[in-house]
Length: 103
Image (spheres, helix red, strand yellow):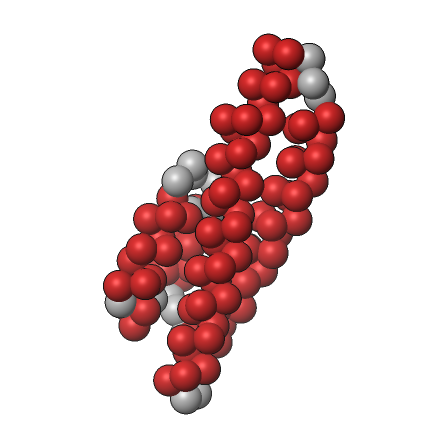
């Protein structure tokens, strides 16, 4: 696979990872307090749907990246775990930006 194709795959994973990370942070620190402190449940419903779609998209993109770039299982597991730990997608993004060949 050409190097430019590898960078495109990593770029897609980084983009979806950042979007998923932002939606997760918004869900935890904006929508949840709005629901439980102010009774505004619609915030969680809307942001929850958006986050859910981005979460699934990220997982699919991580599996696709692992397959196309021949990652081992540990690298795939790290990428997938980043989706459930707050701020972890930002850390992974930084690593991928610095050196996309390590993944």
